[in-house]
Length: 192
Image 1 (cartoon, rainbow, N blue to C red):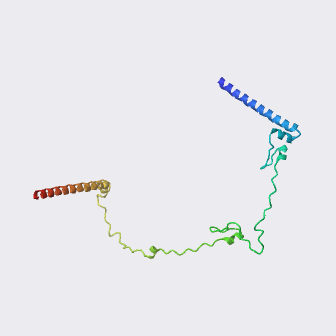
Image 2 (tube, rainbow, N blue to C red):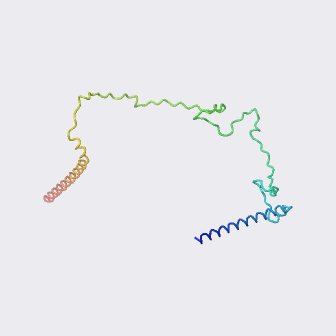
Image 3 (tube, rainbow, N blue to C red):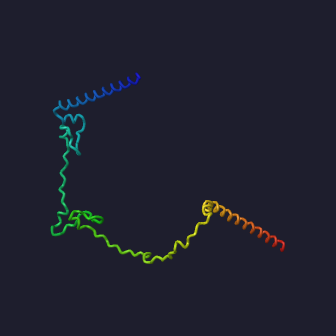
């Protein structure tokens, strides 16, 4: 614990010393500025003169070194050069209001009228639906077979068994076909 306290105290002392040095440097620079009467000589001694083109400096002694931009030529408006007898066309993109009606009265003239869509004739709707025979529900009342729930529970196993049966029948047919071909080949060999 003692070493941590000492390191914290050392860091604190170093910070205080740095702040004192900054404060002294600031006071020294302020005293130089107040003490010297000729700013231009100080600027020449320190280095090249500073030019402030983009902003006005806050320090009073630096405001004199602001560069005044050269006089720009006068801008002539090309629209103003058009004689008044000729109509002025809109400059820029023309606004078209398709989705809403603007509230300003001068903009309501540029509202686009929505196009009329042709009537859609549904070919399926033209064909009348087939009339179904309505049967009396009491005529066809028949109870389910007593084993319907057993059949439902065993259906997956039956499907699997059916697939296996089909495969076995196919293999038997292939074997039978091979036997027939070998018998025919033997008969042809005997006859030749």
